[in-house]
Length: 388
Ligand code: NAD
Ligand code: MG
Image (cartoon, rainbow, N blue to C red; front, side, top):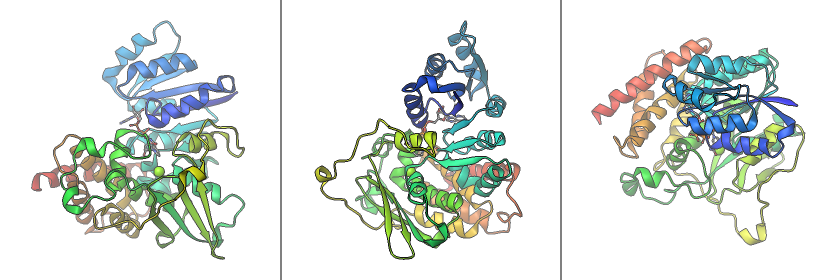
């Protein structure tokens, strides 16, 4: 039996992970499941999987969680400290699927087991990539990517010499606003940004896909996880989301990874790695699909991609600032306090302000300096909003 924990169990990735686990129930011993305010779902899954502990991120949700788990023998805990305590429990495999920079500290704690961290939480690589990779290295732990593009690149590199890679191309669906004019984008509303043409995901990443901030985070994620130079990493718009990434080698060959837009592929690959097992994902019928469409990304209508390149050029704490300003701007857009294009304006202003001094250049990233930069960037984002 493999001991596993799932952080962000009640979310889209968490639920897809649980779907895979439930299909092969006897193979897993579930240690910790964590969630937020969706206490009923968390308690339901903790019972169904016989978890040791269920953790809600919010203290005020603890009474309801305790109540829902009473008589089961499953421990109920709450708060940031409880998340870290859960991450410290010995397991063989941890899914990191909390959304946002809130996933960083639990992920860092889980790496201390020296086992496997399946990383859906791309924000932790964006905010503190060198810290995370260094921590994995020093504890002899392994991080496996659980983003469709990064899992695709990882798979295309199996058996290859990474020094022979010329370029990496990650694809982007282009989201619901792919062909909208800049003028029209100004009027884009929340409900419109929350519908994704090809993927079914959590609300935040769905909106980030519409603004291309998701792809911006993924550019940085590619750099931090694989260590490629920024100029080796390209973005290609591909509306069907069948090709997830391509790796180009020095001889001109391009290895593409194709699959149905279903995160259970990337999750299952990370769960069974280095083996491949049967997965309940649709098989592509390419004759039926007929045509694969590609186009260049537009950095004028979607400035997030240009900003990600600036972040990679600055380095240091720029990733933490970029991600936090983006999270704050996204909160404001979800609260319908700012327009769609204001998100990039806010992020760009915060990044410019905070990188004008030397404040983003640090000798080494630490959880403390990353969280401090994160906090300041969020505060600045809210002040910038008042000047819009
Ligand atoms: P989601 O919103 O559906 O779920 C997020 C989970 O995190 C929930 O369990 C929620 O309770 C928990 N959570 C939220 N805020 C928290 C906090 N402050 N502290 C602790 N827990 C908190 O999100 P998702 O779509 O499943 O995405 C999860 C992560 O996976 C994100 O980093 C996202 O970028 C990444 N990802 C998602 C997909 C996808 O298809 N959904 C694809 C690739 C990568
Ligand atoms: Mg992705």
